Length: 425
Image 1 (cartoon, rainbow, N blue to C red):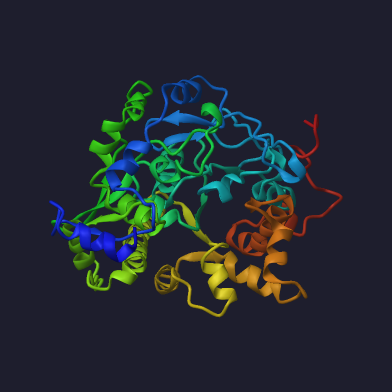
Image 2: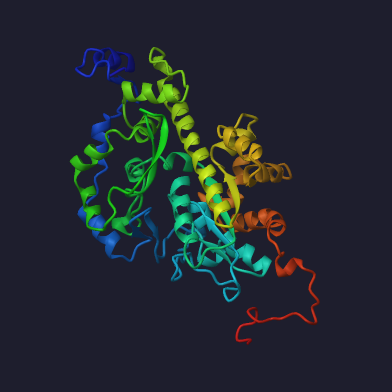
């Protein structure tokens, strides 16, 4: 069926005036899409029983577990383990006091490398002090922020806190259940790699225009089995506006809710034009960007407020290699410019890895695609994590007070090696 013919047919459907229909050929309705996202009981069983890459968490849905994913360089498996405090396992100078905690998604957690190949471990080796890794694959900005609040209120809080914002983390913030959008391409491997279940998130109250912090709808292991019921997924996600816009943008579904989309567009001052049928997917994408970036601005303000009130120093990291950086490399505008402008205007300490890579790329006679393969296997390979660590290290050295021991110009003949030499007391 041609798109125009389908739109004509939709115009006389019972939902006329409520649902706008246009989308990729073969796309399903939003309700059908949600039904597809139900999970088998066997997957939930394996996820909860373990061993699995992720573990259930009542607040942010899941956190890192102990596992050996087969996703590393050259077909290798990667050793992915955790410490008693839930941070990813570290080995560099763990007997020394930790001053830095890091939060974010899989580029903070460092998916696809082993514990000793994370950028935190490379950085710790250079600084001579540990750097904790509380990142987790799949997190959005809000979920990383919530993890930060929890850990920084514990006995392993740190004076210096890094909040790493990557790629589509802005959008993940708004989703009630990220699994619904990743279900079509992510292999849960029978449950051992399951994640993206319901979690705490942000949503806009369309009546007031305010962003509201929402708690995890399925906050117990037993409640997680609701995800096996297709009707439950429909009933509890049918009004997830960010999810619907995202699925429409990706061509998974063919229908948008006119009323809700229009109200969101009005709240965000976006001129959504339903008469421009050929650009509805583009408009949905732009509206979703505006919505998600507004959410990130909210989180940044909250993160700074928390840091200030609790004696923390906050450093924000930006990196989006597959969208913002790719557009910048072609001479285009970055879609997240509002975030960059806000960080500068409000005088945040921040580090933009997009700019670092683009400067580095100019040194080589490579295509951009070939350059990316030097550092990435989807996520950073070990070389990429090493490059990141040594790219950010100058900023970290200047940020820390006192400076790391390796930058204090110590007298090598009188240095105290307690905590550095194994077995030294």
